[in-house]
Image (tube, rainbow, N blue to C red; front, side, top):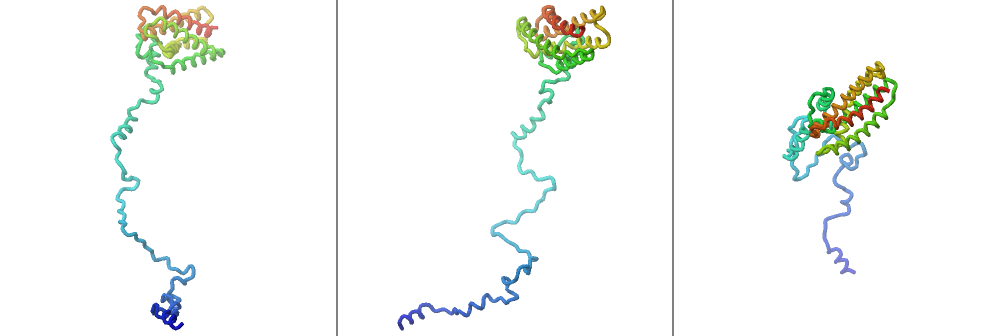
Length: 255
């Protein structure tokens, strides 16, 4: 046992004593920051944290509400952004051109004026829809509710003229072009129905006025068709079915 005790005491020599644990870290009761109660710490002193290797941020030198551009658009991006300025107006994309509508209206109102085939070959249904609605409205003023007959006869007449013109012409024609021309040439018939609001069309003067209006509509329509389809010398052949179609509209206006 004596040899074991000597080995235990001689194994490691240290100056550490158990009494040193009571001394702590050398803080007094008033100076120990870890023994202060909640609410007595001094938060007024700023605490700075520094990360090693981090550079300080540069101050912002731009203007407020005018940020510095992060990147410069490439040539392809600027090309796409400038392409919107070159686009046509929305009405022109929808096929509504007021200049062409006015020229077509003047062509119908002036039967002896030469028709522009390039303009008349367009599929423009804005004017025909307005004229059909105006024709039905003038009939409504005389106590005739004939909107269904107006649109029904117009559809059947356009289909018949479409088939006939495709058989007679060498180039052919679209259904929209036929409907556009026949709709614009309905304008004189609106004048006839407007006269019917003021006086009766069943007398001799009314019959003469009705015949003049039918000839006016059919002549204008045939003139436009032969100009757009290059059907020289066939105006009378085209005017006859047009006169039959507008004669039906005249019967609605008179009776």
